[in-house]
Amino acid sequence: MKLAFDHFDLIARWYDRLIGRPADDPLPQLLEAAAGQTILDVGGGTGRNTWAQSSLGARVVVCDTAVGMVRQVRAKGLPAVLSSATHLPFADDSADRILVVDAFHHFVQPSPALAQPRAAHELVRVLKPGGRLIIEEPDIARLPVQMIALMERLLFMGSRFWPPSDLRALFVAAGAQMLTETRLGFSVLFVFTKVRAKPAATRSR
Image (cartoon, rainbow, N blue to C red):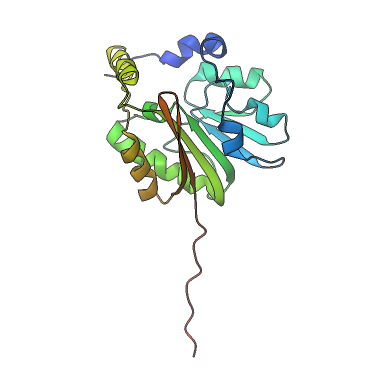
């Protein structure tokens, strides 16, 4: 069932106050972003996870499907695009860093079976070879996350949470190579990269 409104539009104005990051947040270290690099924050909401990187000289672009969230990002002075993760409006190999925090389970339109594998391929497509793709997702094996999943089901949000091993396999199948896997509270953080394709061997005449 698809509702006629976006849940995240309703809470966009208060989202930064409601949702925070831990004091010992590992994301900046995992990103290893440098000045001049392009960071895409996909499903990034208000840009809360990446706005600090812009002050360090990185070019941050937030992508989200909620109009209210995009407005909040632009109010902070960051570029934002209204875009689905299944059809990212960026060229191949164009982003140095891509971040998807607590959002992949919301990539479910028109259906999870179609949207989530497509989103994984899109994220890998846009990532530069040697770049970093960070996926942070709640671990559905944990009881508190199961309660959140139940609540989101009751709210008709359509969320689909992947077990960590299945999520890892999904991105590997999409062409990513896993670098690290880190536990953070009830979530798992994956760091992937994309290996540059080897040039085709030429035959000697």
